[in-house]
Each structure stands twice: as structure tokens, then as C-alpha cells.
Image (cartoon, one colour):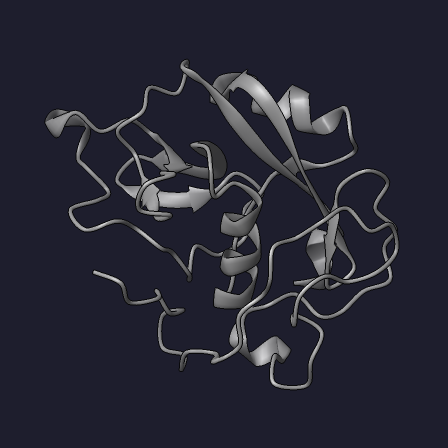
Length: 175
């Protein structure tokens, strides 16, 4: 549909981030500007160092190719992180730019009938494609991926399929 998803109950943020590139210790994009505050659900700026990944607001993001979502906890933990969560529009834009040419699993999981982040963070921001999430009775799976065509979340890829993982490292308590 072309419209950017917005956090539940919050106004859209008008800024966009450019294509991320590995940059140890420096923030990429516009995520550190004063227009983004903790009120919008984004993590507060930090001063984390990223070795080999991309940094946004002091958090480190990297990809792991050809991995099953079911192996994500162990794969991301090797880098001291977890399967990525997106808690605001600016973070979503940054993450989807990391994987704009490939399908990639994120940390959303279906728990009963509710979508949650594996980290336990609130699932207050999402970016589902039209018609998603699919019910498991309609061919949906209990894990989510960024679809490279729509650059939106979908759940029509089996969790045991191999895709790119997006991992994140940063203090969960700071969100």
C-alpha cells in the first residue's frame, strides 16, 4: 500500500535513514536527532560499539545468512545479541534497509494468539504486509520475516526454512 506503518497510538516520524554501512562506534542515519524521543517507542541514544555490523542509536545490528529462525537464539547469541526487535518507525526503517535485497527473519513470534518479541519487549509497533499476519490455519507460521519484495513483515515462510537473520545487541532495559 506504500504507507509507512506507525507505532500504535503515535504519530509518524517524518525522517528516514539512508542505507546502513558498518561503522564501529558511530550512529548511521538520522536516528539520533532530537525529533526522535523515548516517547515514540525508540530506544534512547546509547554509546555502544559495533564491531563489524551497523550502528543505530548506539545499538549494534548485523545479519547472519542462511540460518533457520529456529536456530536464531544460538546464532545471534554468538555475537552477544538476540534476534532483532523493532519498537519504532525509525528503527524499522533502519532494519529493513539492512535487508532490502533478501528475506530475513526478525524476533517476532506467535505465542498463543498474540504476536510478541522474543525479548519480551512490547509488540506495540509492527509493519505487517496487507493480509498478514496469516492465521496458522491459513498457511501462516509462528515466526515473522521481512519480505524483500514488500519490505514488510510476513509470516508465510516456515520457521525451519533458511533465510538471513537480523541480530541486534543492546541493553533491553534501555527501551
